[in-house]
Length: 457
Image (cartoon, rainbow, N blue to C red; front, side):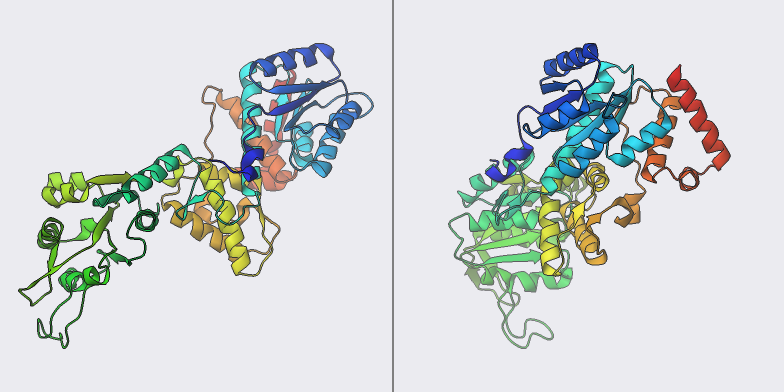
């Protein structure tokens, strides 16, 4: 369950402050957002909003740009300089590209031009809350063991299922098959089963079956007697003898040959092993946990894996979800890895920009937790900045295409929004924006004029 340190990222109802000098707009936005489940405060001007913000914590400030006395831009600047845990959205009836650029440069997360639909409003609020939520998770100060069980980190629903499976498996002596993509933490799950069970005081012996040449695997697993083969100058115990009373973890079990699978099946059935070169069996008081990143049933159907061994191994099956399906666990792990490697390297803990957090959320992570840890290690080791930005990421991640949630908008609208975002990201530098977009300055100026004209229609 979530600890006290995480309550700040799990408030049931986000708190919004709407600032506009038009009473009818204030009333309409309060009504719509309240019906959506948010706690909504209102203010008729920036000065009053600043006073309220000094007394009431708020997640998002939604402010009009054009207001008398103190402008929305000044309010954005105040929030950015004084309330780092609050996000800002702007709304305006006088939309223009320069205004949008200035608002984003000052610190606004979203820029909505009136009139906007309810769907556009709710989508913008949702995106802003997601960014705030992500930043809060990555900036949590975690105590040792926070969000961790058996050395596994996670608060997602799918990981709670894994934790429950581990507890159930640890309470038995049955053979366990752990499945999942490479880098998901299958060995961690195997260790968790061992150390949470009755054999915790005995050895845990991991063996990567794919890393040992198959002609040597039998000797490595079961040991050999002196003279059993050329080079066997002495009797040597194998991994099964080393794991006596404990657990042996057979990783990449799919890489074993069919003849080796027959021998493993005999061990599971008879609880005995035969050292290479010996006819005398030895009792094997060992629990077997196996793992594979391949679909063993598919291999069984192809004749590449024995069905009888599969069913012996899969008495209990635990499937580890890929990182891309674990939601905010990505950010929890990021938090832990950043602090871990900053401490190891004697560096100040850097902060991840909101854009990096967004990329981490949306990236596919084919290498799963192992890839995430390697990326963080590289970032911390190779940068000396307070804030890690997208430009610091590996090129594969840096040039990825951000998913577009709303696929019902016309191309012309999406194009001008993308141009505005690129322009805002480079501080209004049209030469740099044109270079990124792959067009010349004249074409950029023309598209900006067309976008401004359309927004005024």
